[in-house]
Length: 314
Image (cartoon, rainbow, N blue to C red):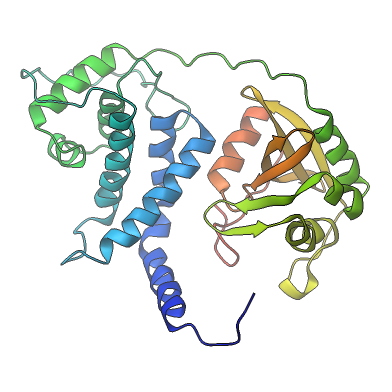
């Protein structure tokens, strides 16, 4: 709730964030692709992208000089985040090993080429990062060693081990039986019944647009995203061109909500339950890479939007 008083610090932070995005937001598709290779999950990749951008923004504030290569530096921030998580999980860190000749480039596309390939979890986090940075993004051995804070000899060894162990991804797990509350949510959504939808939410429910906005409490979710999605927001320039529709679909072992507008899916939504009520909705409307990947895997038509209102769709 607004206090009516100016907030110089908040205004300054928002202005700095917009300036930061001028340089780093165009790199977001590549950053997402890198994080996607590492995490093997579109949801974890999107979370890692958001945390990487937040860390990069905070780190820039205390750097004496801006990075010479924003792209390479952003990969380094993401790599450090990835390796720190691995160490906390008890993974063995990459250490300098014996010099191993770098394998000759194969004429056949590797599993790390573009977003169609994924590395299995048998690869250590360090091997995974090294192979992706080399094969998918073309960084030099020296750049990879700097990003992973190690030596070129250790990178050669990691590339040799990692490439020799690349295999096809695991098959998707079967989704469990859909909870009744999700069927009820779809029915209420398609009937455009705000009262029934609100009754399915916990009073403390949260609707989150990762990296963009959070609505806290069932009343705020109802008055914000649900109202706008079902009936449009003329004051914000968003008017409905067709009645919205909600569909429940299984994807990679879980149930997702697809929100359609006309003949296209406009967003995918993950749901967290608490008993027979909805505790959290994660709406990926402003995460075009996630929407693209999920909808292609589900073989449904879709439309992507920008990372925030006013930004170009990917």
